[in-house]
Image (cartoon, rainbow over all chains, first blue to last red; front, top):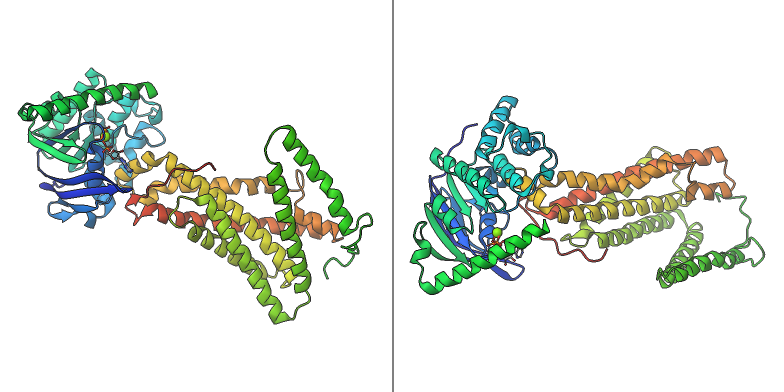
Length: 258
Length: 274
Ligand SMILES: Nc1ncnc2c1ncn2[C@@H]1O[C@H](COP(=O)(O)OP(=O)(O)OP(=O)(O)O)[C@@H](O)[C@H]1O
Ligand SMILES: [Mg+2]
């Protein structure tokens, strides 16, 4: 499977309203080839909704999303979603085994057995999974394992843009390191464009070339990953740190639920 | 008329007479109501209302057919067709209530029921299985529409429940490049399958576990039991066929409604009680 690459993802004055509520408001963001942008923000800031809107799981109320100048709304949704791959926050597994999960997208594009074999190997590696996972039932895996299966099955399709929604939220520190290393190596590949949602400032610093901060559906700050938070005015920074503390609290509650 | 040996008087208050059997069978209703009261099922009112409503409807139907069978040909068939159309329309809205949440449920159920009825009845009339006589066509149309309606309700209800319950999995398929229809297909499949299972189970146990109403009626009417059995089988094939048509058509239309232009999955409002 060969792939091209996207030179520029351009989001202009994007707004999204659902059920009378404004979810995203006036978002403008450009991402270039080879670049990794991290999105930070408190719970409910609209980070996930922004990624979902890029791949047309929601139709924007206003504004445009262009992929190398072509509006995503003019593209065939399946083609768009193969080129721009979204790995959702706590992703749902398909029925069957891990291998079937990875095969699903490949079979849809009519890949032959050899290509499928090769893609499975490559994507297992990319998601720091090993062969022993292939025969396991995907639904029975732990949260962190599912996260990696989701990364693997997306990676298998050779996307040009990777949208990762809290890719390490459910992982222990060691797995987090492994997935981060995988993301780093994808970056090393340099044929990628990535947007990574995270609530870990340190992770944004490690992975992002650039970081944007969202609050209440808006982008409130944008800058260098290393210094974005430090550069915020003290009030904004305090507010952000407060939100972050709330979010970690919620995550813990969420773990208990599962 | 068909049941020539039928010489019971509908107005008689003597044993086995029409008025007598109605009054006496109230005993059964009383037992059901008493059970409901004893176990606090809270169904007493429903049972009473359903019995009165159903009673009025079926009696009205009886009188209508009685009047109908005396009509001139042209007028007769106009009324028969109007009759069947009414069944389809009532079925459409009854079934649509089970598919609340779809943008336009009645559209899905109407085409399902209409096509199922048209094709099944048309084929049976054309193949000369069903005689072109209102006393055959109307009750059989009733069975076809009624069973299709149940199947449609079951399948749409299931499809909506699965779409709600498996929303993130459906989206996961879409995110891996499947179009919206493909992403919903496993759920459409299980919806259609589950709605046909009751009919299949009845067919499997036909004659052993239960003798359907139609055959009961024919036997009581004094028809040759062998012919009655043959006819009952035909009726079951019609029910199976029309159920399959109705559910396939209505779930296909429902799928279109669930996926806006094949791009996104519509937001389904929260399910209410049922
Ligand atoms: N289908 C929907 N319809 C209406 N509102 C929605 C829908 N999905 C999400 N929202 C709302 O959109 C807002 C943004 O949600 P989003 O999931 O993008 O937050 P987030 O920044 O990803 O938060 P988190 O860090 O908790 O994942 C929230 O207020 C949420 O309640
Ligand atoms: Mg989120």
